[in-house]
Length: 182
Ligand code: SF4
Image 1 (cartoon, rainbow, N blue to C red):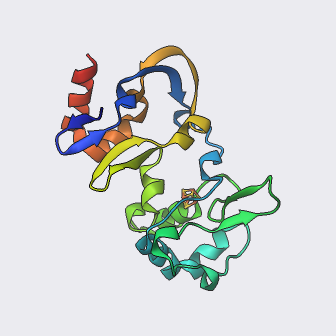
Image 2: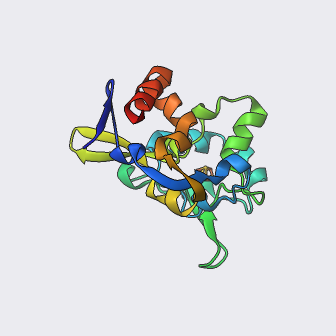
Image 3: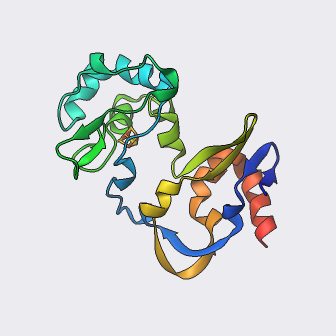
């Protein structure tokens, strides 16, 4: 059953204890979480296209933004760069395993939230539809294969996502979550 924090529903997995820790905190991110690209809102894609020419210089190979198919709003995702089937990744992942959209926004003084795809900003959290009008904040299953690595100590999972949870449910909400675990 969901954890209720104010107006938010959170997956019960946040209050489970696991021997896992976030490796992103060690600055050892290898970009694996960007391997498959990400689903986008049409608005995400349209905003990126507006900066397409300027983003080209950050990319592993130029991308033909005119070829980006946005005709089916529920099925838009980032383009996938594929040198071969073993080396596929989001076209916006740079050689240094950082995001070109994020880097470009920082360098241009554009707020990252104005350009980077919604679900990339939310990751390693995601939204899960439990019903037609019920949505829960959860840990993206992809995080278990990428960001989370074995740890010696057992910890509540929510502690590994403090920054993202505080951004989403606020400091008071995070404190409430901590109180539930106490
Ligand atoms: S847009 Fe950036 S953060 Fe999102 S999947 Fe692509 S490279 Fe990763």
